[in-house]
Amino acid sequence: MAKRGEIIEVGDRNPFGEDIDASVMESAQRDIFYIPGYSDVRHARELAIRNGESPPPMPFRLQWVRAENTQGVDRRKISEWKSKGYQVLSWEQAAELGLDIPSTPADKGPGGEVRNGDQVLMYAPKAVAAANYARWQQDTQGQHDALVTRPLQDAADAANTRMGLSEGRGTAFSFEVEEPAPKRGPGRPKGSKNK
View 1 (cartoon, rainbow, N blue to C red):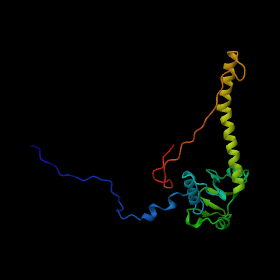
View 2 (view 1 turned 45 degrees about the vertical axis):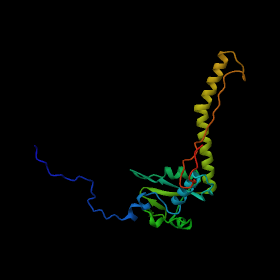
View 3 (view 1 turned 120 degrees about the vertical axis):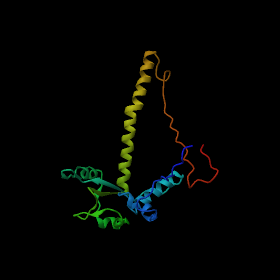
View 4 (view 1 turned 90 degrees about the horizontal axis):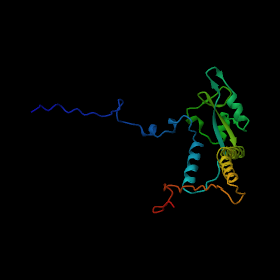
């Protein structure tokens, strides 16, 4: 009979010990773009929508924009966002908006702007952000129409022409979009079901 060897316990052990500071693990600082006073409000709003609530709109929109490349200063992206109605956000303006920038990894740039590495923080008021969102939705619908709807309509028209059918008597198509019911989340009562 073979001699039994020594049992060696194998496990993934933290080389720094198991005494873990939970506040570091849960810190928003782990995401370098998290902005207290904005990111948390936006996240709460999205959760409320998921739970079927109608929260108020966001009062403004923030956007991190690259301001440098490997050759140094590059203001093209800043110009692009300015053309959409955004402005570079200063450290003081951020405080007036109730943003807790000092608790983030961001720094105050040489011109007083909020910087995070090679990016600057830009701001748009609610009306500007709403207009940009509406334009984005229109552009998306236009792309859908050009790439999906129009080719299907053209195919239906071609089939009708080949078969000698007139409009109203031939092949037609339509879209029906069904939104899936939200999954039961923390805000939905127990026992509620998806339909």
